[in-house]
Amino acid sequence: MKLAFPRLLGTATLLACAPSRQGVPSPAPEPHPRPVQSVIPAPASVQFGGHEAFVLSDSTAVVYTASATDDVARVADYLAGMLAPTVLRTTRPLATSDPTPRGAVRLAIDAQATSFGDEGYALTVTRDSVVLTAREPAGLFHGVQTIRQLLPVSVEHPAAMQRRLSLPSIRIVDTPRFAWRGAMLDVSRHFLDVDDVKRFIDGMALYKFNRLHLHLSDDQGWRLEIKSWPALAALGGRSEVGGGVGGSYTQAQYSDLVAYARDRYITVVPEIEMPGHSNAALSAIPALNCDGIATAPYTGTNVGFSTLCASSDTVFSILNDIIREVAAITPGEFIHIGGDEVEKLGHAQFLRFVERAEKIVRANGKRMIGWGEIAPATLDASSVVQHWRYSEGKSADSSFLHAARGGMIIASPGARTYLDMKYDSTTVLGLRWAGLIGIRDAYEWEPSTLLTGVSERSLFGVEAPLWSETLEKRGDFEFMAYPRLLAIAEIGWTPRVQRRWDDFRMRLAEHGPRLQALGVNFYRAPEVPWRR
Ligand code: TNX
Image 1 (cartoon, helix red, strand yellow):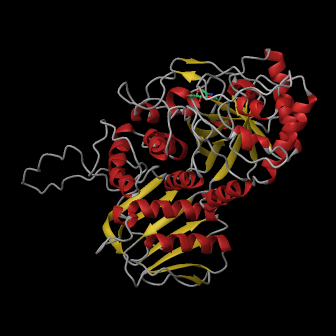
Image 2 (image 1 turned 90 degrees about the vertical axis):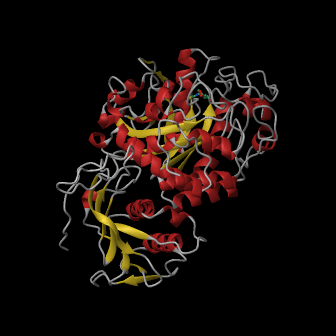
Image 3 (image 1 turned 180 degrees about the vertical axis):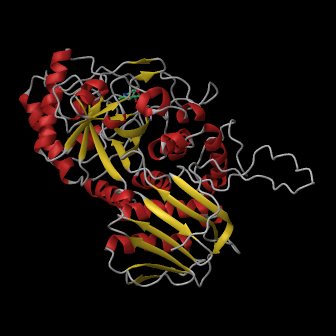
């Protein structure tokens, strides 16, 4: 296909300019010019040809190539559902060799297009058609999110009357920088029910995240049914920070969440904390304690005071039961074992514990992830270390040890990615031990130069943890996550050279009405000129 686009833009820094006619003084520039496209995360390459090229209507057909898999049909259905009722909610298969019908939106797999990787895509919008191509269905799904963001905000209001859905003339070729683009929900300190977690997954999908890390156990609550040790959820799941009623997921509910996330190309990564942050388990199963006596439930916010008994083989056999069950209902490759802030074991004892935990995870067919503190243990290179202990100017964990043995690191520096830190000194919710984190702080940092000894090659990607000591309900979680989550999305996806705070800020402004349409309780950071 021949494309007649006026310019190739290596970056997404594309602000609309007031047209200047010769001889006529051009009007003063708008203080906040509207970007011609406001996709977040910014795509790797964009050629923009003009607004309102392709108008969707009830004669628009969503088609996909017939040789493609069921997954492609599913993404096509998802897209048709998103465009309904403006577009008829039906999809139609085509043969690979069939030309794209006029007025169609076409989804196609190109198995040869290796440059797309597992998640990249190309999108071409002209007056006549919309063509989205990827090597894998995940790429099509991410491309659909780009289409969604290129559409007016009314796409988020299917019941709106007389909405006009149109796309600009555009050519985007896009692939993510990092394979790991994660967010973490702490459902232990305060429990979120299945529907709330699904809403969070929906938001992650819109911004092309691909990992949901669920922090399922801590001192204050155990949140997943374990059939061989039912007391964990039955007793350990009954409270949360401040008392409350707590809650836990049955295995069926967890599987439903995993499937919901998978349909959005997001892998669930379950975390079972050990040996510290474990009081909920210690209160439910006496045998996990060295003295064989169950502890009292804990509903405060201190850390570091609990540990599973490290010298007991029974403990490891119970852990094996737990990991076996979690592995069986987790199709993803990874299980997170926590490992942070253990103050009640000697260092050597702690490291031996982590090494035994790794053996259990591996014996159950999974790769282990743990927080930064685990790096000095003798680990397999297939395990992953999640760096977190970072405050500006001093990095205090040993992730580099794991990078040196060829292992991968996930960057979650506290001072940049901790979504539970206050935005500024007036923020009511949140903590501040890692600092105040404004939108610019969350956006303007570079993972590949963050840690000495951890270069791009050793970086799996980035993840933003949302700890919930101070967050009680969905609206609280959202207020802390949005919009900083979008900054982390862009760090995970967009090529480094294309990230510019000024450009991001302007694009972010356009997401206000969209987040509002979606009912997301986001923080209207004063440094962003939000659109109404
Ligand atoms: C540190 S980050 C913790 C969590 C807390 C969080 C609060 C990490 C591995 N441990 O247990 O919830 O700070 O910001």
